[in-house]
Amino acid sequence: MTEADLLMPMRTGEIRIHDDAGFEGMRKAGRLVADCLDMLVPEVKPGVTTAHLDNLIREFVYDHGAQSATIGYRGYRHASCISLNHVICHGIPGDRPLKDGDIANIDVTVIIDGWHGDHSRMYAAGTPKRKAERLMDVTYDALMAGISAVKPGNRFGDIGAAISAVAAKNRLSVVEDFCGHGLGQLFHDEPNVVHSARAGTGPELKPGMFFTIEPMLNIGRKDAAILPDGWTAVTRDRQLSAQFEHSVGVTNDGAEIFTTSPKGWHTPHSVKL
Image (cartoon, rainbow, N blue to C red):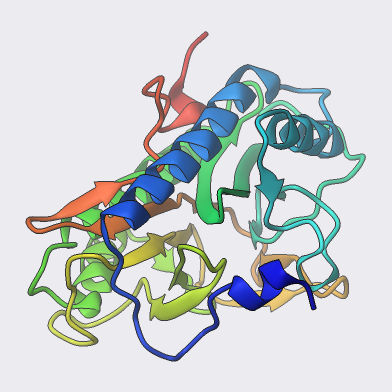
């Protein structure tokens, strides 16, 4: 064990409260990962492989003096998860070329100066079908509804309730097998942030808490299955799935989004270059 390992925080089972220095660290990490996902917007197109996109991400992270949080994590070997079409999350980059109409969630986590920036967005290769476009639009709206519920005095269940309401209104299902999580100097920390919950339940939100909100919505049923690779989660009915993720911090009067797009490309599937 190195000296750096000894200085790393450990999970305590408690939700951490961070100070101003923590906010500054998360702003830097969040800006870097958002820049990375902005870089990918013109790169996602028919004929490009997900392995190529992952190599671009790896080079970007290292060129900016950061580390990939996913390379080496539980044996994972890639700088991103890229989840296509009916893959809910944790899709492994590979040699399959993107086809016109494919949709992809690209999820990247960087570490810089000890702080984690965790962020994902939906992209489209070529022209997506209308139902896929609508799924992505609604999933982004659900994410932002969840973030709007983040304020001191509210509870974590209010986040899931807001997301669930958007999904139900649009007749989409919320995946319940995966959730958001605390982060900061740890990749995964307390609390779990569930995306389908009852308002007024769960721990109270307090200034200084950092966590991700990352709803996954399906066109069909909410049920997920894990492929034999041990990572890839797919919809059991093979219908489309979409996900967006932001890292946020609780402020004195609401939420600060650390991973907002510097170019305003919050929904890459709708960006016209």
